[in-house]
View 1 (tube, rainbow, N blue to C red):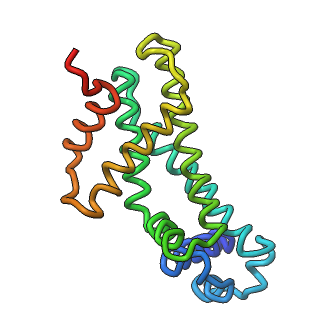
View 2 (view 1 turned 90 degrees about the horizontal axis):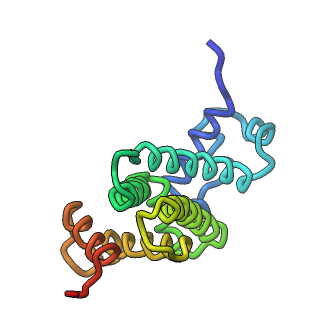
Length: 191
């Protein structure tokens, strides 16, 4: 049986970043959790930032894959956009590393963590932008600025899922879907 030391290091670092955050994680902790010498880590990564970047890159790929699996060509743009957004935000909410990074950004404001959060949000906006552009091209929705539309969609979802529950009873999935459809697709007009 061959031991994949690099994977052991990635797993240990992910665990450490998830438990302690980026700022509080040390290469000594990662080495201890991976059961390798600290020097072994440096054969694969030049520093903590390099290791963190590889973990975040894998996380982005994992999130994108989850969103793509939620899509169904038989469904409308509205249904697919909602499914993809919900999957991305569900992933963000349920993944322990994401929870810790969001907490660290809010409480400490670690610059590298803030940069990573922006990178993840940009990935989501760009992914949704592609879905919006395809819907425009197919004539499913009115011509609009796809990036602005994606940004608004993401932030409406974030507001309904994360911001609302800071001060109110959380919405269930059906309520979020109904409100998202109302504000994003139907509008408030009685006309």
